[in-house]
Image (tube, each protein chain N blue to C red):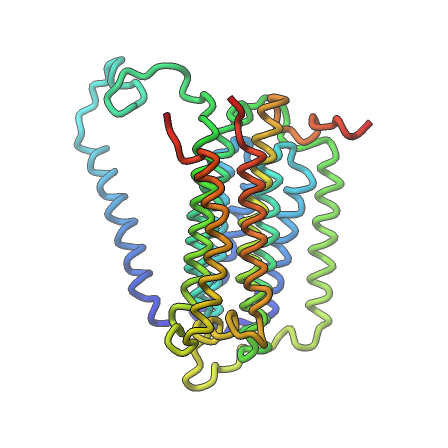
Length: 170
Length: 117
Length: 102
């Protein structure tokens, strides 16, 4: 029995993985960044399939709206690379491919032997609103308040660091 | 999952409209290229310099500040839907969160990252 | 219905592709793109485990939100470093940035 959602999952994941492969193999960096946008968008659709609509929105806003744009800016700021001659992969790439395949094989093996891997999603409880639960969890002192505030400190440090490092002295 | 159906319809429609617009222009538009028409479009000015020249780093700093407010908004959303339930405590928490992030903005401002001469 | 293992195998594939990009690309910006793919695979896993194993426990979602913030920080600092290195050495090839190697 094939459900329509399974067809959606297979199509979306195939497009996403194809786009991800293009990201790591395309020579032109601007194109690689645009393929990255497509891969990130596929992941956003998977978040919708997981009934985490907020994360799909956050994925589009943060990853596609900000991070991918930052990538394209960085490519344009270091422009020579866009048409850099020579191979784009370093000489040890076959070893890298073997390692990546080994990691993939190991994880697939672990998934196969795990007895709960075939489980289906339990129905969400009546009246359960994940987004509101998340809001309560993020600012409740006995739950995730500290990680939430520390995230802002981390962002502060990262952004000031980025400004200091990228600053161009006259 | 059915609440996402309008979004799917919107995607299909917008793709179709864009594809049809491009295809119609391609089919019926006359093509008489001259040298000037084949130049890259730079808002009506005569293009100068190579199109692949480096951009000033200011653009990157503005993009970094954009990330700052982007993340802030994403953290605001789950808080905003339960704002009334959380009361003053939640408000102070979010004020602290936004205040810490605002330091980065003030720093960039004072440093002159927002000034374009 | 989609079994949990589909998401796990998809995330494993995405993670491996990102890992390959990180290990094999010369361009520093491309390496950061590989890192982004790996972080996305992690997020897929976190949300899949949240939905399939413990939907009432918000830990998975909170973790995923923090991963978003960490990814943004990592990209902001990483790309600033790449731009700074490019300004001094006119190169973003990771194998040419080797002053500390010897």
